[in-house]
Length: 69
Image (cartoon, rainbow, N blue to C red; front, side, top):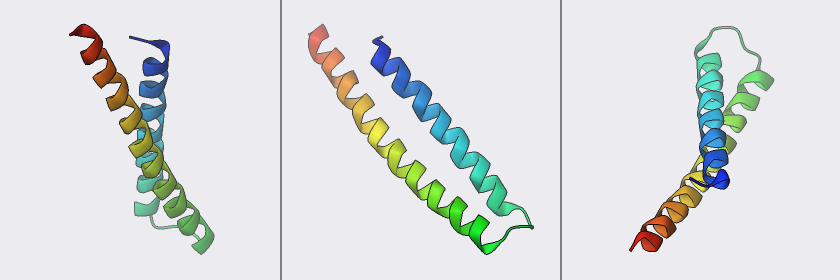
């Protein structure tokens, strides 16, 4: 596996952990409007970043498959 692929996997895992952390935060009781709004914005941004990373990972995997043929 290339170092780029490994780095993307690590980044994807971190974004997924962040999304879980902020989702858990939103399920708690104590939060200000700013805290809720900030968490929701961060989750949205992280989900978009995950989509981008997954697209890049698919491209790399496709390239590897093509190279193997």
